[in-house]
Length: 322
Ligand SMILES: C[S@@+](CC[C@H](N)C(=O)[O-])C[C@H]1O[C@@H](n2cnc3c(N)ncnc32)[C@H](O)[C@@H]1O
Image 1 (spheres, protein in one colour):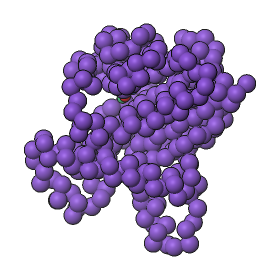
Image 2 (cartoon, helix red, strand yellow; image 1 turned 90 degrees about the vertical axis):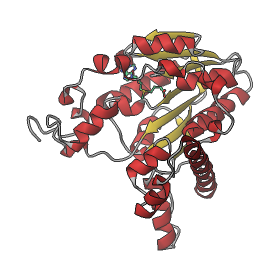
Image 3 (cartoon, protein in one colour; image 1 turned 45 degrees about the vertical axis):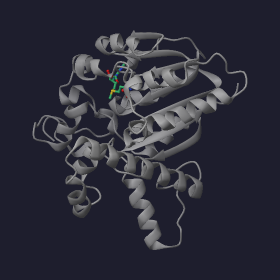
């Protein structure tokens, strides 16, 4: 460690890596080409691995909508970016009133074209600019991994404050173990520094740690990691090489876009199948320490591999009734 050795996760900050978040995020996730993307998506594409995130988000919102008395439903996405997920949500659930907040004004301009009824530019580390109990459903997608560890608990407390009693939450979170404490934040060749610079992932932690934070404010309705390693699609599977050389060689041969969509479709369904099976066997909280010993070492290893292989997790929450 070059200048200062951080002692706890709370010492891991953007400043330590010489990143100014406002400048870093202003244009990075401003995707002008995602406007109206839902209308252009084929049905095949909608079932690929990349849209499994949307699938589970929609399932969580359906839970909220099915509660009697929850109409009209006010929904907030914290860290909404350009509104990729909001656009889908508004397309499939046009009855919701959709709010978004993000620190990038470029993203917010695009989000407004993507179906958000209200979208504001705000650095949410300062707090959430909404009234107590304002929302029925609050979600984040690919956001908590961008929040410094020291800001996570206050952020969750804020989300809880503005969620109605009995309201729901859903969080798709980058998860896993990143060795921040042993990195050299000032060395451009350091692997963790490169990782942080790539997408801004300053605060990635395990699902176990994530649930410990949320459970102080919410009931955990369901939480699980993606059993398929890639963050999004076949390209990511190949980059991670988690499933070994044989797998890599087989899939690396796919060299045209149509076949890649087909491969993503298969991995998407496999991901969903495995998730649903694991949830049925082990219950609603699928983390390594919460999965019981099966008594069969080979089966334990297999389950462990599936849970470790995540990189991304989904958590559905409910706030207690007053
Ligand atoms: C990976 S993007 C995800 C965007 C969107 N949720 C999606 O899935 O398409 C992370 C977003 O979090 C936003 N963000 C990070 N830190 C933030 C903060 N402190 N306040 C508000 N937005 C923040 C970034 O500007 C960026 O748009």
